[in-house]
Image (cartoon, rainbow, N blue to C red; front, side, top):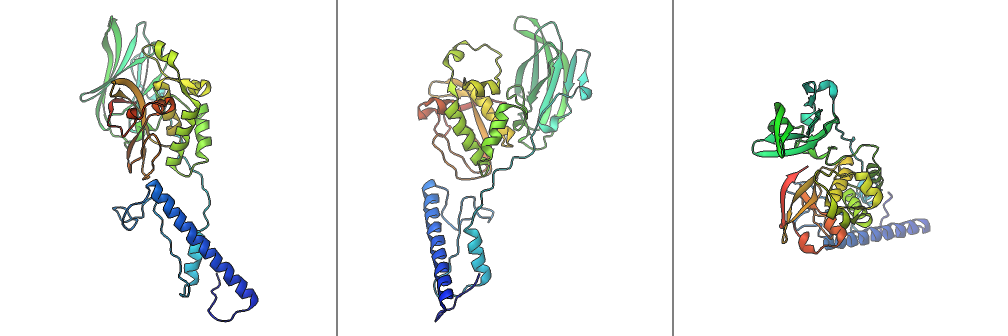
Length: 357
């Protein structure tokens, strides 16, 4: 960029100089407006705009505008010019994280196949056959999860949501009404590749694939977002606008029900389990760790399902929930879509988590 000294200049140079300072005034005005906007949104913080580690905070803005009459280097002016021109870059999802039953790697008996080959990826898979009802139990210390599994050999996948440690896996067969006895047991030490693995993949409770319609819709929405928080916002807005609460289904749903995420998307209705499963499927498919949570919501102790997602970005606030820095955040689309009283959403203090999937 050319610098124009004070004093007499030619006509062409004078026009160019006026154009330069007009540009600088626009940049300065843009910076002021952006700072005001960030202040209103609560994205800024007092201090020098740096986090605890000394790096610039997400959402902080700094600009250097040369004062009239001061000399500035070509390099400095070029940097200001480049910073003023922003290009939208859509969110790039990581490679799709899948799960599967690997029959060739499974251990067990003639009728029970337990696949422990992907424990570090946060899941276990099982297949069994029996003329009786079957359950699959996953234990780690005092934490116990019981699941229904098919008796015809159809594989099931379940998350290792309790983190690293020693797990016990039991395939159990119904012996009398309400009672089950183990027919196969295995114990393994689990070390996850990272804490997010169980909440990035499909399972029986959050069942989807790369070909699922909800995954295609999530990818479409992600193309209009700049980052993970933008994807969460887009999915949140889409589901609350297009899926309504199904009161008749809530009255008639049977024990053992599992959601069909594409059916929820296609029919535009569902119960809390459907909302939470669809949300988890869409966000996980885009590489955003998402838990499906079951628990109670006060003041009426409603048994409910909702979501929590993980983000490293900071300071984003929306109408129904708040995103905190580098932490799991609560996302309840059932109450949001149904227009529930805000006491059901709030800051999450009225939620009691009991299980994660």
